Length: 193
Image (tube, rainbow, N blue to C red):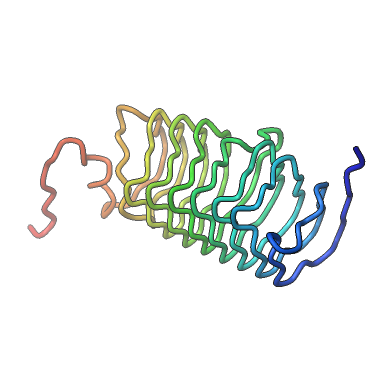
């Protein structure tokens, strides 16, 4: 079966449920305000692509390739990134809504999340070595057996990370975020003295 190869093309305001995107490899393409919600992106390849203002909520990602993909101002609810092709898996997220998504067992070292909402997102068994969470809301996000070595959480909030259940050597936290490392002990930290 012939697979399309599309390079350096811009897609603007397209609803891919109405006008399906051709299956293939997309390199250096821009997707601007496109709707991928509930779309089956299985086995598509996105290399050096930028997604801006797109809705990818509940898209199917079986063996989808994301290599150096950038997501900005995107709605990405309920995505299963663990189903993506793990070969070269790399992306960054800025001002994205990633609630209820899962990165279970993904190896996404040095991934940058900036100004993102990651409520009830699952990072269990993931490798987030040197990842950066810059001003992110991590309410009820799961970190279980996660590698967080050298990860940066200094400006993020609402996280709960058990140091005994995760590898956090040399990870960075702010003083105001210490509570998120001690939640399981149900203690009160008072800094008014």
